[in-house]
Length: 79
Image 1 (tube, rainbow, N blue to C red):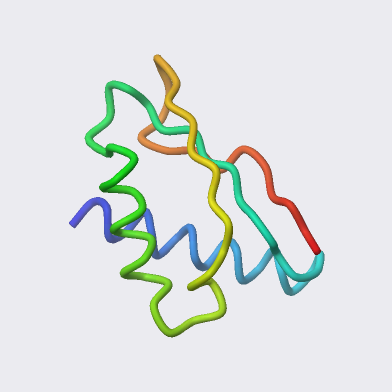
Image 2 (cartoon, rainbow, N blue to C red; image 1 turned 90 degrees about the vertical axis):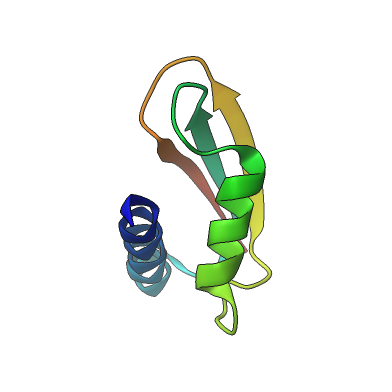
């Protein structure tokens, strides 16, 4: 349930960002080692929320960090 809320907010943020800054090519995400998300879990959830949308083939770079929020969008790369 918690993950659902986080991913909905991420997609909503990307939509807002793209409408003001241009088409998004890739996002960079930090994942906390002490959070509940693994790399695979993050990608599984993102794929689920992005299915059938323009985000379906979005490039994603994931980096594990020792401390921090569950996941954090750190950079956006545009076309």
